[in-house]
Image: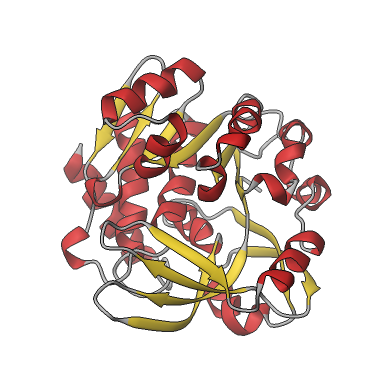
Length: 302
């Protein structure tokens, strides 16, 4: 498998600042699988869930011919209330309570063994969205060893980035992956700085590439050699921004893993996010027409 995505599955009730409410929307890292599928066909999705996984997610994965490898170890898939603030930031709480959430995170862990059957010398990249408590972050070296020619990407959990006691552990694990991602709001909190320029300085001190998400302002790829930014796509047509960060981050892995030009890499990510924002949930099916439209937007931006 060329690309493997792993992370959380959840059902979300979404609350917007303008009073809109969307109930029982599938959420989580499957948005990341959608981001890669916009550009590449060889995609697998690894995760844990409840026996109701296919009720919520099955059609999307089937329609897009994305290979799923799900351990149905939970009594039911996690459910959250997702509450947006006016500035685009968000908070979430488990609808089933903290005890169920803790249980689900304990028995629903992703392990290196779940990746192994999908990995070989042809695997180009693995994307993992994980908090430190998920423990797979303790196994990055083992996951990395499974893909001798591939790149490992970590999208860091928001709550961890705002916890000063976890800063050292986060920096240690960034050192174990090839590329990581945060958004600007998270970066400001993590490093205690305000401006984009200061955030770029802090990223460069670490010395690892970072896909830096700017929300409605687009995104950028920051390394020691360059900081390249590209504009957003379809912002004026946005229906629901949920999952755009996951979607764009995973898509950026393609460009990084395949050595694509940085601006093109970021544009690919922003295009994936732009399609994602056009409806509630991810873009429902990537077909020939979708790819043609995406490539036209990309070529026009070059």
